[in-house]
Image 1 (spheres, one colour):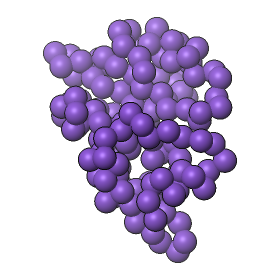
Image 2 (cartoon, rainbow, N blue to C red; image 1 turned 135 degrees about the vertical axis):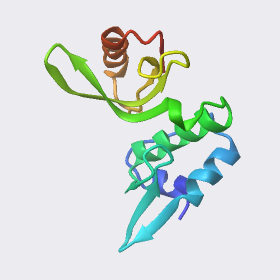
Image 3 (cartoon, rainbow, N blue to C red; image 1 turned 60 degrees about the vertical axis):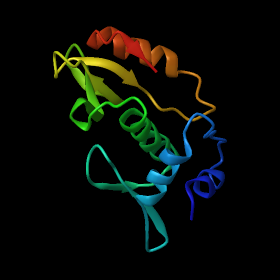
Image 4 (cartoon, rainbow, N blue to C red; image 1 turned 180 degrees about the horizontal axis):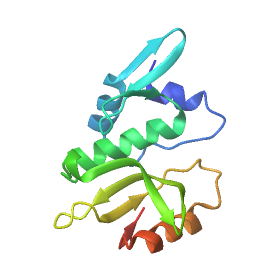
Length: 136
């Protein structure tokens, strides 16, 4: 099974146009099947996660950040908690930390279903709460 096939089985239409064949191949190499379900070894968390469409896209972004933009894995976090006052239940999909301040978010990346409309406001609020200057 390829990630294209897994994504085509989804009700939403994801596009892989911005990802290189090298990144796609790296994510496919991390794909394993167990009992009829597919899993990916997350390159940031070093654990296996269910290969849902959003997770596949997240892994492609992680590959792109590491291979094309040369961000080391030490500057990346997945499911990073965002705090709004006392509420810390929100989590950013991917955070790239500042090179000089390793605990300060520099880029926040939020992966959404193609039909999702509310991602921009959510991303703006995450950047405002953390002070991250860049969002994707």
